[in-house]
Amino acid sequence: MRERWPPARHRARLAARPMKSDLLDRIRAELRANLERLSRAACEAHAAATDPGSKAEGKYDTRSLEASYLAAGQARQVDELADALRIFESLTLPDFAGDDEIDAGALVGTELGTFLLVPVAGGLEIVHDGTEITLLTPDSALYRKLLGMRAGESLETPPLTVRSLA
Image (cartoon, rainbow, N blue to C red; front, side, top):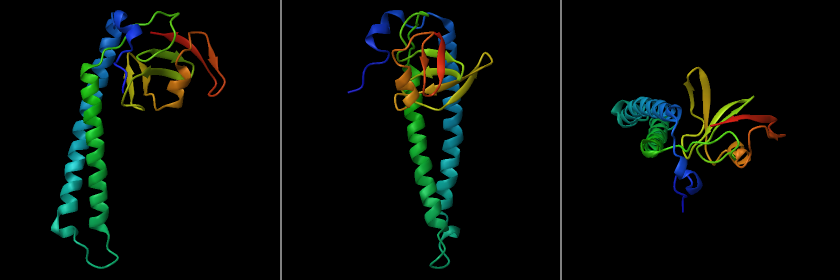
């Protein structure tokens, strides 16, 4: 069973800072734009897969088969992106003090970059106030390594030091 988001120990200090609210708005907008773009591409791939003109002209002609694989893959991506958007529509991020342990919902600054620990949409990169922020999910090894760390602590692999926490 999935833990409620955010974890219970942080619910009392939910995103009091407008920065995290703005950040969530930016992520939602990016997910919506990606969903719209991918939905159009999936519709085009489906049309190509079902078009009578893509029918095989010989036993080695695999255009229609390839088009159907592409359409199925894009439809799956549309579903995943729609699920991520639904999660972000109701997501709130806890506020962290600079000396707290890193946990779900933390915005973590390191010399390698800035990371936001979220439940879905891992790998998405957004720019907020001139800072590139990469979303990390629990599937990421870096996410799991950062959990429990504090500002000033370091990792050997990958080599990084936690500079800030919000």
